[in-house]
Image (cartoon, rainbow, N blue to C red):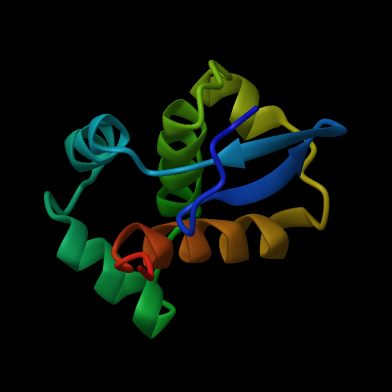
Length: 105
């Protein structure tokens, strides 16, 4: 079971609940996959609503990796996400936002 902390975000994919988190390793993978080259630019895209489907997939993939899931990018792209594309986008935005929140003491 995942260690629950403020940065965890759950998403149901193909009927299975996954807990995602952006660990340092997942953040490094995310940075490598970004077309803009920075997390700040990705945050700005999500804040302005100018994010792409690719941004959502890359974020979810990094979060799944950080949560210990080995779902491939191709499998994720073909997966059925409970709540559809809007739920996927909300989960990606929440995951990104929570990665930069300092946990309460």
